[in-house]
Length: 270
Ligand code: LYS
Image 1 (cartoon, rainbow, N blue to C red):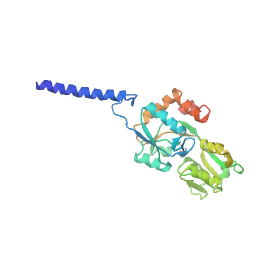
Image 2: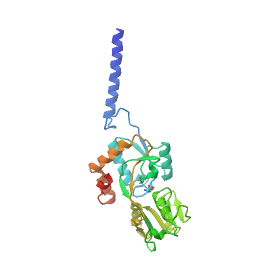
Image 3: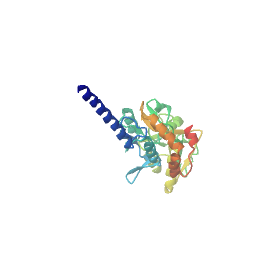
């Protein structure tokens, strides 16, 4: 009798456990049928960098936002996208109070020491935004000019390389939109930021009479990635999801929707 009830007990446990497994699978949360329920991820961003992430009618909108949605669907995660701001985003990921960040974040060696990155998902480079009548023609002309940048960006870094790290002519702002406002109000001669962002601004605000200057010799190509706390277990899952979006045409669709041209997926995958 005792033996029987012990057996029944074990059988009951096995039944309960396998029922849990089925539950997980049928919830549609997990494509791989992982044994642990997936938590809702907190994703940090700086929603002042159109067209990647910006506020529109109270909602965070942009290419990154659509890309993130597709990646999360593919990876089988629920998430909350939170506008934490640029500098705080790095703090959040360092302290692991966010699970990942998406914010037109350039993958570079310095950041790689403290954070992990996904595969690349966007090709970018810095460019110079100036008034239409500006005499600035290249990065070399930025010497002795007042330059506005978003602090803690590769734009700031590039400008420091050009004019010296502690140069007083560099004005740093918490948001790129504030750097552009400084230019418009005459407090700066130029803004250096990601090409897509400055081109987007000049095009969408024709009455501000701005133009954009590219300088391939001064500004190197950069790639955006999702940024994770160092050692995050999420990286392989998200790399795989991004690869799938490249292969099944979803990435191309989202990209074309925002930029009206086809992306160079082969280059991004390389
Ligand atoms: N891509 C640049 C960087 O990672 C600028 C990003 C700014 C985002 N608000 O530094």
